[in-house]
Image (cartoon, rainbow, N blue to C red; front, side, top):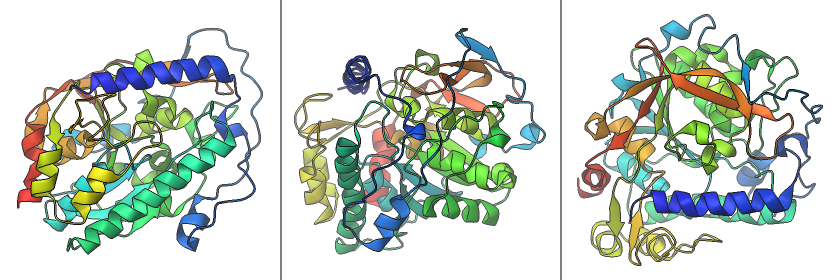
Length: 390
């Protein structure tokens, strides 16, 4: 089943949640004072400081002009994001670990030496419409399964795997000045890892961060050290055919961080519909044990097991989405076309952020743009299994 069915299901759920919730922005609310009991790595890295609320924006226009989008010093020197492939160093970043197989794919690509995987990250800021009790329960699910994915891969004999680490679990607050450089960084182990690996990379061979969820950790790395921009490329499955529709979960849960990333970093947006479907039979026959058993049994709190859920595909099949960020970055042959984009302003978020105007407005760009959309993806199933079969 094409991926757009899953997108539709998520959009319907999100719109209903927005109508019912009416909550303030996540970045302006404190986290619960108690983290669930886990190992110190997960617990300590999930903590983030309480942030002070912003006053509500008085702007009434849908779009607010932005002076520095794509015009800040050094933008023209960013690497061309279409020049990267599997020879670049990679970091994988996702938010939810139970409704997709991006983590498993990233580790398979590392084990097969398809890519030099430098980081295996998860970060998950709270949706602004979700109460803290549910958020902490869901966060624990994603953190637990992020670590379990790694453990199952190791037990399956896979090698050369980076340990699971964690990015930011909060949103960035838009500063009153509206300037990216006035945005406070949050800090996390994942932030530090991206900064370090980007410093070790170069403009000629930049670090690639493949993102299947929000871009808060990527934005945090830039805010921590803006000098890494010339050695960093982002491939983002932000889950919509047109970011200006604002209907995608990944872009919504990025908030102001999306504007930071898209105006400051060389970025490719996966705007493709569909892609490929993997089956339970393929997983059983091509993935080593016990990782195959884990892939066929793990469950998301809402969607259930990806291969068994009928919300977005037929039973026994999985229509992949987040995984495309890895495949588009590593395999240029999967990119069916490309279009330059530009950030032309800000628009109000569909979710209830404060202030409201935190989302980038996209327009067509020129050939010098470092913001690119990929409208279609092809042969991804071949690319997906290439690492498992090698």
